[in-house]
Image (tube, rainbow, N blue to C red; front, side, top):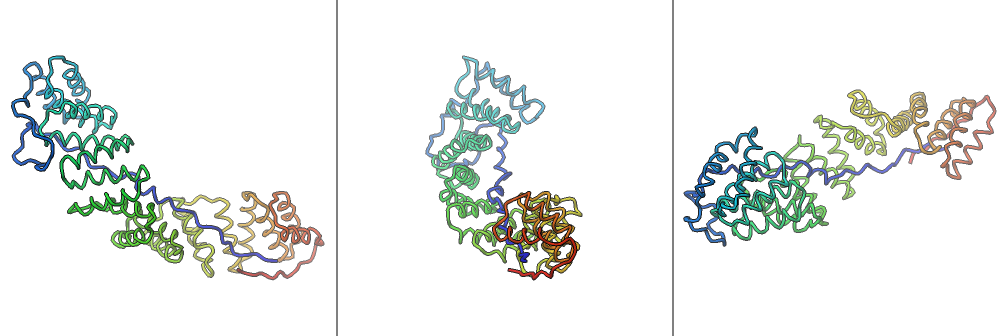
Length: 405
């Protein structure tokens, strides 16, 4: 009778999930005055509007001054938007009135996470084409942010490209928005290029940018480059769970299972296992390793004791296998008994029947064999063993030869 060490496949890590929650740059605060001492985009292709046209009409001066006064107060959001809409709907408003009010309303709507309204206001400000370059391109940048937050990634990419082209700048935040938008559209090779440009253009690039660069390289097929970047990120951020799990996923993709397992164990030592999936990935990766039975038991026990790991078929089966190969047949039987009802096939009950048989508990062995047969899904070899067990006398045992793979 063979009771073989499980060689079940590792659970896949969803590395793309690491990008989730990456914060886009916040919309910059607006100055009350349009003119600035130093131009932010001196190489912009757009000509600066005539300063004579950048003036609020007398009829809207009171409304716009009120907007400027209260826009930073979140409790006044509705009032700001109402005043803005009043300006936009006034037939006497000039292009500057509309652009100036709309750009502020766009910031207010963005901060309130009303991205649809924010997009509309920013587009209105840009269409009016009446702001100074600094404010015009601030509105364009903020439009790209709002589009990305609204998951309009095609729109965000187009706006970010337009911003970068017209300003002739290497603004790292705009490059990053372009990179994220391309990534979300599955354009991984160009996404990697743009995010790398963002990293190179920034004096203090965020670690999340480097994570995205690594992910984009991986998705584009550059696994070697992605793995090198992932290792560097993991080494620099030993307590960053995202960095570690992405490194593990790439190691597994590259068939470096021993290295992946070592990183998982380092995560456990650093108390980075905080979810059911964390503990599950670790014990399933450890289960096929020869001589790791006690570690599997310790990992599962720790996860259960912390109320993080949920007891299910895989948990009980892994415990049963590990106890069996440690020679603790009593505990193996206990866990096979728990795993049996949860299994989809009869193999678990058949293994239980084998252990009962090995201990001379023929009545129990025959009962477990009947449950195995009822579950089904047995191989021809299993059926042969099943028939042998069913034919046993009620008393007497048989020494079973146990083999490991």
